[in-house]
Amino acid sequence: MGQLMGRRERKKIESKKSIMHAAVRNFTENGVTETSIADIMKEAGLGVGTFYNYFESKEALLFCLLQEIAETVCGQAVKSMDDGEPAEVILREAVRNTTEALSANPYVLPLFLGTGRKLPKVRVQIDEKPIRSPGFKSVFADIIKYGQENGEFDKTLDPDLVTEMFHSIFQAASFSSLPYTFGDNVARKVGFILKGIEPR
Image (cartoon, rainbow, N blue to C red; front, side, top):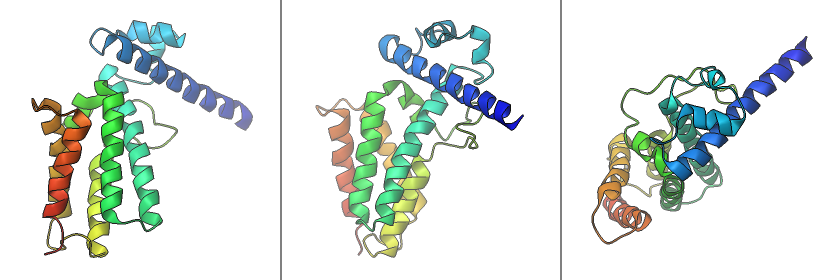
């Protein structure tokens, strides 16, 4: 019985991953608006009704894709903190990794910019872990605190306030009309903030 349940769980995870991979290909080639749930499921080789066993909507699927990106960025930052790397290096790396992920997956950018709003419902868990808000903000706050503890950043600053500034950088860069790429725009703004949070 346990073996049967194990197969069922694996099948559910595989089906969900197939749907997400199919969505990425379709969103990249055709855009979110032009991609229908039927398009995604045809690419995944599954029936349209199966989609709703896993996601309530395309937005919920996008949220899961954003969640995966966030977990990758967070995992790299946590490893760097565990290895004792300087906070500024970790912060720049986290920003660069986030920028590269958003540039490679532009269809999740609107959701990333609005992660403070009401989040879509997701019917199943990602690899049996609870769904939560994408962890970009929390990892930036953790890096700021880590830097404060190590004396690299001003200890009087509110880490959550500084984190909001980092999030706003991505928003400003995405709407900027300046002659810089998205990545270069973000990197330049990060440099300004890092100067501002040095110990007084």
